[in-house]
Image (cartoon, rainbow, N blue to C red; front, side):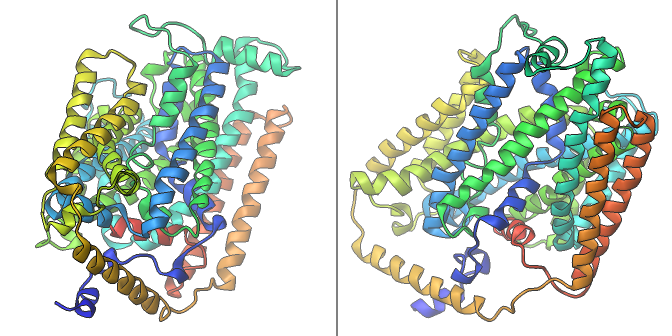
Length: 574
């Protein structure tokens, strides 16, 4: 096969990003806000309340941990993404080999399925509260109504994922400003409630605020096993929460669109709005609801917590957040599995995967989002370490990058063994627990990396492949030129004026909602009245935003922002 024929036969998902499609900082701000302000924030925020750490440990620990996560996104994931302009999954074909890359897709698909199940389960807690279904305390479902709620939600999300992902991805991004507003209201409207029910008295200084938080929200005490957690554990938690996306490089699919690796710093929007501000807000709401309901926080779910402090607006937030988590997750899982089951159509695989994920969501244990994110990251970070070693370290020590590709092997045995060693190391950590689980990802990363360097050197990476390298460089150059050529044929995008006006109206509605929240927090508006009016304003926001998306979609216009496009592209390249 000659070079031009090889280029033409390359699937679009394996093309590098065209020069025209590269984007700057602004477009990634909305993207990272959308991806990291989701249903899991309600659960993780409550989890941190049960850590037994002081308020200063939580606040400072989250600050440092999220800075480390942001830097990892930038200097590992974004750097390799902008160097290659490829998705991780295309890059893995060059390093792991075709068969091992497909096996990775299965592992990633299964892990992501659990995250999708968590999204459905969290949304179900809000519907459960509306229908007065008991809280599910066991790891298995104990009420038929709860199962029916999950099945209906799962069916709706599956159908949407199979038929309308483009418009849905845009709407999910549109939900972000409203979600941020609700978390903000969760602080300014809940703190007065906390003051009232505890009899704390007025807050006249920062010291008073910290004393309130230390006494009634983040109370320093040993956890169940008698272990005292501190700031270092919080740092580890915040850093490890997105291991699958930064250390394991799965956000290459997004960051390959960045003009520069420095755009990776925009991940800080997701880290500090979603994983700092939202977690803190959810923690305060959880602690307040626990006191209001005279129930331990561990016995409450997200629906019960948000309804207690924000009424039906809180329940709507849980439903929307769960949906915006589950829907793109369904879509990505489907495309991941479609690379294995090629005989089935996208819709067929979506319905099969959606059914299995929905069944899993019936088990409340799936709502343990923090554990899911931790173990998913640990399962795949070894592959990220292998990629980092091959991309950065191999050229510096005289090894050949893509050596397995040049040897035409479907399975890179050095990578397979190193990944297996990484998984075995995690299993040993789980069994022996010599250190807290929030720190496992650090030694695990180096175990996989050093194992791969040693094994790859023994299996062929030390050898030189001049002819194969020359051929591959020519192919990469020709493919980039072809991608640029095809991108020039795409028309410039625009947003209809009616759609812009509806979006503006939606943001005005949010501004009014914030003003009413501030009015309530200062005691000039009754809390119950605010909860009712907040629900009305929320509905108006979604009507305006939904109409804007619908009009743009019917006009076959995608808008100028890259957010939904990048999510769609990253999903389609799994």
